[in-house]
Image (tube, rainbow, N blue to C red; front, side, top):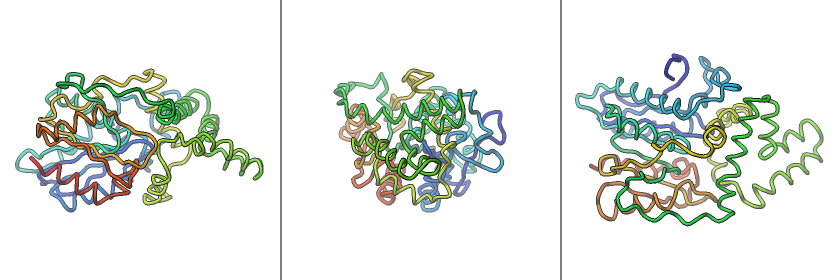
Length: 349
């Protein structure tokens, strides 16, 4: 984190003299932990120096506990500040590299990091930074095409009301929960968060088991019965692979909601105009992989068509790959498929 020597954490794997560099980061609600299996394997089995970052404050270290990060009345970190963190991480990796020739740089991002990663990438490319990525890999979230994309495919048809609810309902819950934590009190924030996701347990602990059952039934109607959560059981099961000890507390998870707060409350639903695919995919190609086992989607068909056109016309090695039998955490659910596809992409000229 710029200006904060204890602020950020970057897990580094591999040899400094590797011919490739990869910067990885996941999004909400993850520290570096979910990416460690993929990142450490990439460093071990390929000639790649790997650095795994996360959104500031999503980790919880002894030197910098999450409660010492910007929080409460300070609104967490805005997108420009997270971009700056990614820029610093890229700089550190380049400085760590001892490769005789300039190592190729790959950005690998999941969830919220895919959005902010695209902002970092486009700004670095525009600035001519020596740490700009040469290629990008996105998992389950990808930005819209650059507005100057040639022969732009038609925009998507409007989503159904159900899809809008699936894609938006949970995001507003996170945004308002973080707002409550910032501007009212952490206790109220927990109540807001629990209201939708975990309030049955609270009722069971503090009131009565009968009430907990009633609250649970009522609370699960919108998420389970109506199936308006974007992810499913397959993703819940995948998080067990990360380990119970690595799961954040409710308060910490609410704090991790600051990207939703900044998007929907501070920026009224509009991200920076650099949050797009690269303008020239022949110079900075993109691999996008997404799971098919989920109710919501985190891409537009317009983006898929642009990447597929690159593949069909052999304009670049860019491609979109649907991964069956996987959800949001596809790199944990189908690790070999994701690893093999990513390595093939990285090795191709």
